[in-house]
Image 1 (cartoon, one colour):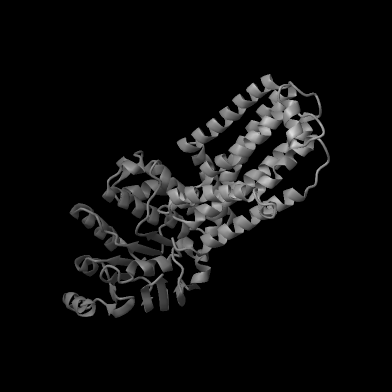
Image 2 (cartoon, helix red, strand yellow):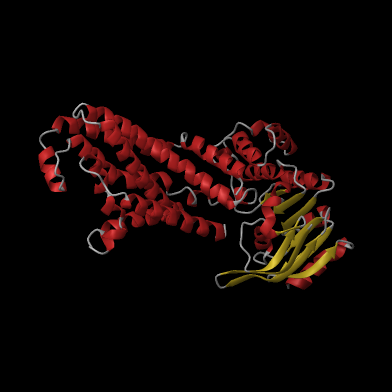
Amino acid sequence: MITIKNLYKNYKKIEALRGLSVTIPKGSVYGLLGPNGSGKTTTLGLITKILKPDTGSITILGKDIKEYYTVSDKIGALLQDTDLYVHRTVYDNLKYFAKLDHVSEGRVNEVLQMVKMESKKDAKYGTLSHGQKKLIQFCQAMLKDPELLILDEPTAGFDPKNILLMTNIISSFKGKTILLTSNHLDIVKKVCSHVAIINNGKIGYEGKINSKANLEKLYMKIVK
Amino acid sequence: MCFKSLKEVFLDDLVQSFKDKRIIAVTVIYLIFLSWGMKKAVLLTGIWNIWLTDILGFGQELPFPIIFFYFASIVLLPIFSLLLSYDIISGESRTMRNLVYRIPRESIFFGKFLAIFLINIFANLIVYIIAIDFISHTQRANIIQQGFLLYGFLVIFALYFTSLVLLASTLTNNSKKSLFMGACFIIIPLLFMLSNTLKIISPFNYYKYGLRFFTESISYTPFFILIISSIVFIFIAYFVFKRKDL
């Protein structure tokens, strides 16, 4: 589904990725774990064309990253440091993205129902709380019912109720490939089938989550 | 390039511009100032005509409203273009990511550029219609035909300044910085006018050519210089935007 080989990315003098290689199998819920600044967000940015790689290759849904936009209609993403249009209503925001995704307006109501936010559809996006905004951003990622869902820290900034809602939604998906980053081991253990631990821009561990109890030890060993 | 996505970005930006308080305020002030100025200029026709046409070096006397319209546009058009366009890319740094993972950058870039350029030339069309109304009271010459060429010239200047400000908007993700850079990009060519060599590449050097529609047959070279400069700015801005990390 996604194959990354020997990926490098520098921000001026900071080496964010140093030869990162990872394979995300089709149908997996893949957790990318790692401390802050380890390169998780950079990896997702490179997969979604937000960032430009220095060297390395990415294949996504069978296509080289240069042909990303031939498969972008199958990809949904909730990325960090993003926002929707603050002066528009929730509904108008999602309607615009629905148009770009070539899906009907009816889908807007469906995704709002999924996150239990139908009552906020006429509210101005800028007036929502941080958690509510994040749920609406999740909605924009879900509009096209994507085959591949990329979620950068999907539960960050949520209260326990919304963490539960989000993990239940992710767990309920069947047949989708989901790549998510998180700092919360318990969430990864709950929803992911596979995990990679990234540290200093490289993969330290990659594999299935077999013995869930060992994940903490493994994580601490790699990121020490 | 995906034209369907380009059309969606273009239409959305166009519709949102008509709802944007800043864009409405800037456009209304621009239109009021020029209309009011021209109304006053009609009253002053005859007092300033001879003096100004003499200073500008035209052999034929021009009505003051034409001169006012033209030079007010010279002063206001760059400012209007700057205030309209400075944040078309830089102002969307946080929303841009949701677009970029969906649709190609060229669709976003050209969709946004075309929308803001259309707003600019639409505002100038209103100015032109008002100008024609005022000017027609003072001159019975073939003002509409000449005025239309004058409008065409203003559209080219609008294209020039919009592309220049667009370039500033792609160079940074901060709206305030892009406003400052855009202002510098306009002021620097103005300073070039002080040098005989550098003024060749300043757009302000070619402003007076517009007035020559009324007095003599003109060279079309300035048109091409300005259009080519605009295309160069648009493509530099495009390649900066295409390569930048968001």
